[in-house]
Image (cartoon, rainbow, N blue to C red; front, side, top):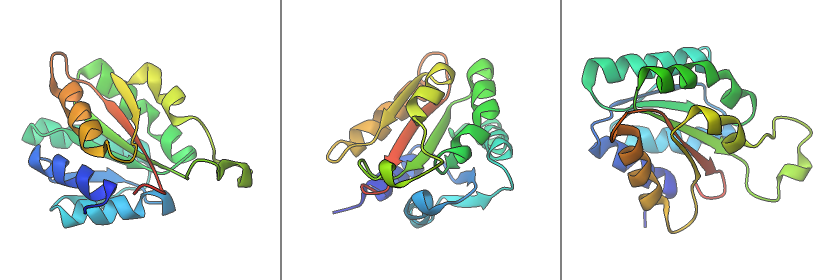
Length: 162
């Protein structure tokens, strides 16, 4: 049975995505490996904001949705300007963020924020992937990002699910 990360990567590849951009962190390493396994090249950037704009450029060049990968906390907030731009410019951008598992937040002293609440005003939709529904989540995200007026969609992938 494929992992949640593999399902997401496979569905993105089927949508024509061949490039993803971001800054890795422990919460997204499994996802980055899955992207590579599906034929999607991960491009390391120096900042998530640059990664978001590079993802937008890929959409403009290929017509496939852009992919921004960010780890928890500051990784997410670093990409907000590019996500806001994608909303205003009608860019189908899939924003994949990693998070630690539920219940583990209490052991952290920093970097724990509500990614959906932060992303909410800047995306067409925000989801947290859940066991048994990852395929529906990524399919819905791609449909929302590309249908009608295109724009960014956020998926938060818990490390325990990846």
